[in-house]
Image 1 (cartoon, rainbow, N blue to C red):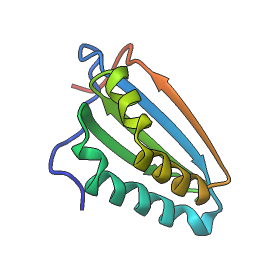
Image 2 (image 1 turned 45 degrees about the horizontal axis):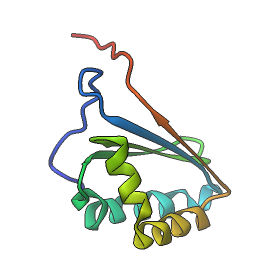
Image 3 (image 1 turned 90 degrees about the horizontal axis):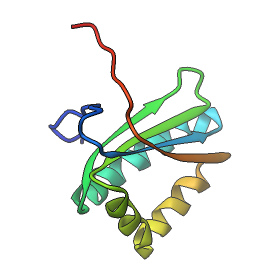
Length: 113
């Protein structure tokens, strides 16, 4: 079940953004998206500094993208240090062919008003 809050991309917020691209076999895409969503709902969203997670599945079935926002890099690093986090990350990686995480800042947002 997804959170009732909506993610917002705001360059004024100065949050840390994690964009994690998982390459998957098409028959594993739904499993990985579900595992990420369930883990976020049950555990990750309750961590200090958590802002939001958005999970995207590519139309070709070969990728899952996890777009996460944290209040600060320190909050994200504290989350990563936890043994249960490391165990979950290994579980997610086990469903994928490869994982490419990156940390970002939002420089600009352009939207139709």
